Amino acid sequence: MPSTAVTTTLQVSSELDLPKEKSARFDGDQFFWSYTEEPHRTRRQAIIKAHPEVIKLCGPEPLTKYFVFAVVALQLICAVLLRNSPVLSLRFIATSYIIGATANQNLFLAIHEISHNLAFKAPLANRLFAVFANLPIGIPYSAAFRPYHLTHHKSLGVDGLDTDLPTPLEAIFLDSILGKAFFCTFQILFYALRPMMVYKLPLTQIHLFNIIAQIAFNTLLVRYAGVKALAYLIMSSFLAGSLHPCAGHFIAEHYVFEQISRIAKDSGNLVPVPETFSYYGPLNMLTYNVGLHNEHHDFPAIPWTRLPVLREIAKDFYADLPHHKSWTWVIWQFIWDQEVGLWCRVKRKEGGRKVGGWREDELGSNELKGIRIPGVQ
Image (cartoon, rainbow, N blue to C red; front, side, top):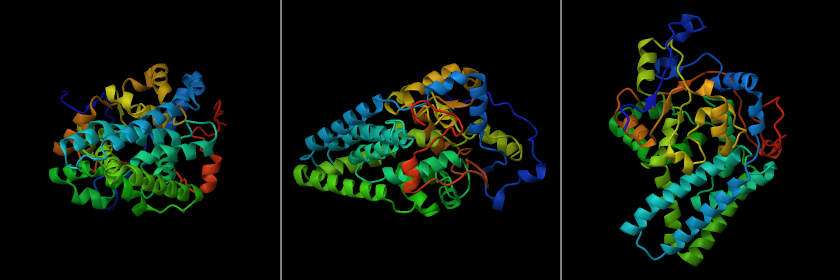
């Protein structure tokens, strides 16, 4: 096991291209505040200039739908097989954790892929397929996830827009070992409820369809397989966002770890802090390569199967970026390391925009505005 969660060759600069008086934090909080444009647009433009062939990697991945069908079928089979097992039995809990949580985490990230229009060419086909992928999760969320997630991309770190950011209230009350352990155990609930506390989305046709389809599915499952079958799916979803190795990606993607956090604090918040971290490890095979997170934020229109190709083509841009080697170690260090906590996120006051509404869904999203993407535009 590595001694640190992050491998980094971060070069420390004594100054930013900004007046020093702008380096102070807002309201006395401990977040890392940035006054520059989010880094992904800048790096994307540089990569396209140096390696224009990466544009050919953009567009839907047909394999995604087959994997989704397989995982949905797997979860239904497990739910039916466990219909007569006691919920608190070793068989039920072990299956929920080992198979169910891994499968539902896979479906979470399939919905993440689909939200970028990367399963089908037609935006509406992606919206409807996301609802299908949502079924074994038990709770309707795919329709709401998409606008919140696209806003996260277009408004990375923007206070009041990026709902991936913990609120100051969370950071204050969970700023301890027990608090962070609680957060890691119940983080799926934080990610589910926090967005609605930051801002609310309008209720659209696709939201209603998501809710109706999920209620119908749950009702039919309970009627023909029993309530324990549904309990298996719900438990799988909870464990998928709890103390599970694959759940480490939630923390690994944007929290600032150890050396980088210490360097930034010691500099008085004058050192530029990386905002996104990739993970290069075997669990990417189960999670649609979500670990290649810098690569994904740089090029959201490149599907999971081609992100490793992007990294190889543009290795001169990615080789020296700080990255993680273990999601399990990420969770462990997040809980126990006093240098790491919910405050360790980069925030900015301005920039970005909010994504949401049926009209936006109809039009789809073009994450590389101004660049023609084969098969997308």
